[in-house]
Image (cartoon, rainbow over all chains, first blue to last red; front, side, top):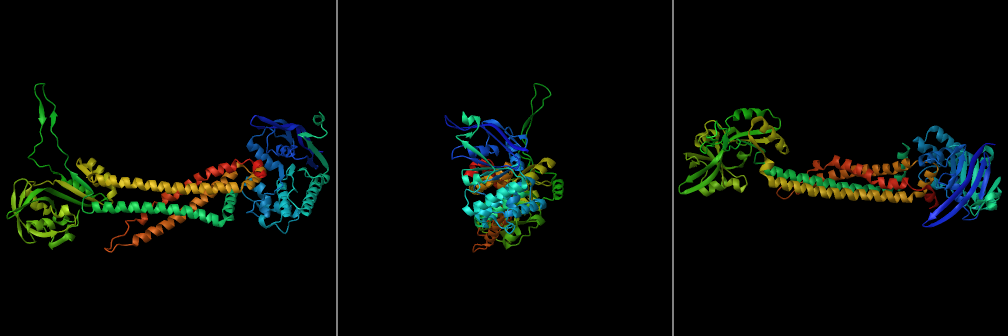
Length: 231
Length: 401
């Protein structure tokens, strides 16, 4: 198995005036290609912070992160932006689609922005992805005319546009009704199974975690079952 | 350019707000154009009024001053005195006139003899300011022949033209004789050929015209002239022409602006006031653009955050907002220029009951290119602050909002 993510000794401390809050305490996480892992924890356990650090949206206080064989914790802002674009995919609780663009344009956006425009191959790939997520009849719809579940499926397609090494999902079903949430979860499982895409899904929902192949639980800033947690 | 596509979509996503923004810019630009055209029009009218009946450049001999000469020995002091008897004159006026005729910027040349004299009619004596011109050059500087109200404009050998008020004070009319006495003590009986009314009181009560031929023996100037008056195609270029003639001939050349320093000062002050108004109207436009784009950046922070999260560069985000500023500025300035030109053109057609323009406005002088460039560049500059704040949004914070 190819190791996609290797995070070692991740610590994160926030400063609020003179007060220091340790959110993550020597967290180790690793994922192999094709894993569908749930990152569980109660509110305040540090799971969103860990996801943001792995997603290069937040710098760790200490620790090392290797994604797709590349050490990333010391990258500059520009390098992290480029890395996110090329190697990571994001799915958030709120899809944040660009309302002034069609479903196809939204999916193609991560590839189009650095390239300076949507090329024919990009459009083709975006349409393939939309077809993959079951939206072949909504390709040219403006984002504003899609339902909540459809928007989240577009967000999944967008996350896959640049063939990322790792897809990070933060409460991807949190804003959806039960039926739509089931469909989105099924879709992620299908993409994981068929495309061997690696997913790390941050959730507090046991039902979501039950559909994943692996569980990583954070308790008070430590990974459950780790030596640090036992200490 | 994909950033341009995004900027365009952002602007078209709320057409009424964008239209309002462009309308605001256009309004400011229209105000700029109106003020500029009005100030320029006023300056043109005042300049025309002042220069219509006078020369744009006056050439005179240089003022001679007494000076100490180099002495052959220490006991002797040599001084060059200036004769007060000898009249200052331009002896080489023919060559100067020939030089001026070759200048495209010169529209008319009038070599003149000017001086002071008295007109005596019976017991009445009146001081006059005499201008002697070539008979065919009577209208070169001032359109005297069109102002004749009695007699005609033919000067002839012994003819004189008098201002209306002067003729009235002396009880003279066309065809009557009058005794002319110069400041050189020479008397001659002249015939009033015509009476003119310029509308300028100081001219109508003091000025008289003679021919050069008549004036030469009267002012003891058999060859030279006292001054050469020049009209230009473009009065604004008088300083340059004066400098050229001064260098070429050594004569004292005075542009009309120097002779009317008060007017020049007033025009400069007016231009400064106008500039202040123009700056304020542009600044208010730019503040409007900056505010609108800041609101837009704030409203779209979620989208910007997600774009940043999936690896869109800060430069791309900033470019989107700067392009929005550019589009708004260019569109607003274009609409404002067209509206301003239309408004000024309409105002220029309005007349008073006497047929003159109601507003001295010059629609062609609205500073269109200036305001177009300034507004567009200013709009780009105004969009830099919202662009920077949008580009610097922390994606995590923006998404969580």
